[in-house]
Length: 358
Image (cartoon, rainbow, N blue to C red; front, side, top):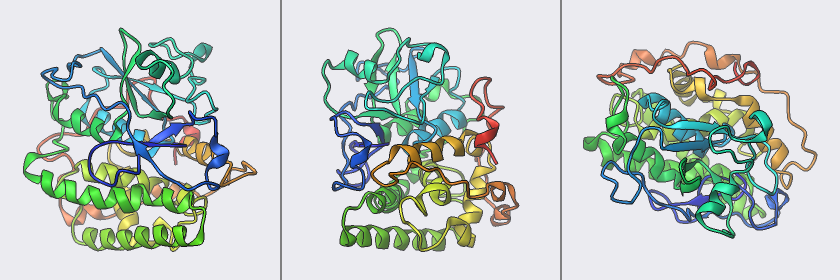
């Protein structure tokens, strides 16, 4: 999540997901140089009919994520809700990057057990030798060739919901229902611009005016979202959709990092009754909170962004017990999974360690 990349899709062309530096600047530059995001360089798609050259195929691809990164967390939640764990394996990188990119130091021998690589940059290099850009997560890698297929974080989750249908679990929800796509796209455009990317614009601002603009847009959008959610359980329709996934991954990081580290401090999430209840509702829904690792989140932001937090000190708070308290959102009705069912237990090897959970 250092220097992200964007892709075609809702939102402006100057924003994107979690990356490791690839330009020799390193993470010390954040907070010291103007913040911008560039477009995803590798935007291939994995499709049901293989029209892009990458057909959907169980076991062929590996999703590489950081639990610290909100953009990667979208893919983790979607994969779990849709029951794609057995079809699309997942590798988890160390939340602490270095200038060689995301590292597999959480695995035995410091290598991804499926791809056999030590750094995610190796998969990028196999796709394009000497690739000069940042190395971002989420990334989907072709296991047979070991090369990156896509780092297009905007499109990955949409394709998991639509192109991978043949491999969805029985009872999987429709996260991008065709009848609601226009409304979903409209909602996620504002969420992306002002909230998902807005916290970064505020946190990495190098001047007061730049910060003030991002801060104002962020809280204006949060106010609108709070109003929207006051009498409806979910953002679009009466079930969980892509829109809820995209908002949740920022909200769940708000009090632990964005409020203090990124100076997004008009209020804490826990101080807005509607947004706090909404976020808790999702957190307590299978597929959301069971993918969140607060330890990874805090370690990454406070230790990697040395331009913003030069001491590297990781704060002790906030307390996490509130995430498990009653939310009462069920009183608004709604059906979390529509006509479907909740996902099953978290697969062995993918559970969040105790120090990352409430």
